[in-house]
Image (cartoon, rainbow, N blue to C red):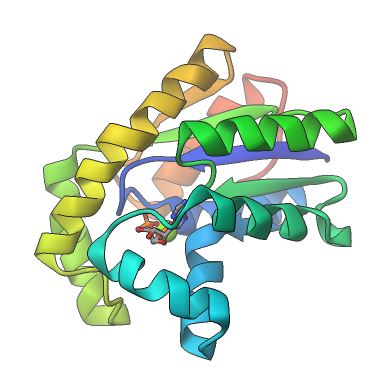
Length: 196
Ligand SMILES: Nc1ncnc2c1ncn2[C@@H]1O[C@H](COP(=O)(O)OP(=O)(O)O)[C@@H](O)[C@H]1O
Ligand SMILES: [Mg+2]
């Protein structure tokens, strides 16, 4: 079924893992700006060269770059009937940009899934991921910085979507299937049934 969804939550909340499951369940692409930036860094593209130092510091890539990237991704054919955004929008400017982009299409966001988790618990998860995946922004200093940036810049965008009645809160602590079941229940209750 068509669905235009956003998943938000602090670094390490499990967005990427759940995003893949939700996208499969709805037959829509999961679009992760973090993954797209990391791919560009790995391939040494001009965008990757610009983004690398910013990402390694735990800061946000400028909206101008991020917005263009998302626009071209959402214009691809597979996103015509919907998408799940992971890691975007992350700033008020990105929310405004996305609103305008979707308004042009005559569409809009159906739901924002907020994975809720205690940030101190998540530091341990991220340090473990650093050992497994070797992400260069998963050291303790950068993790704390990313958490701070999240609280300052991204938490407010949840309030903006909340004011529109779009936010569904899901407890992000627990096993992958357990959290998936909670997401499924939350989306079903909003008229978006799918086997997550
Ligand atoms: N929407 C965005 N706006 C600005 N920077 C972004 C955005 N998405 C990703 N980035 C950059 O990529 C980094 C990693 O993002 P991501 O993989 O989504 O982190 P996580 O899933 O661990 O929260 C961010 O710290 C930031 O530098
Ligand atoms: Mg992620």
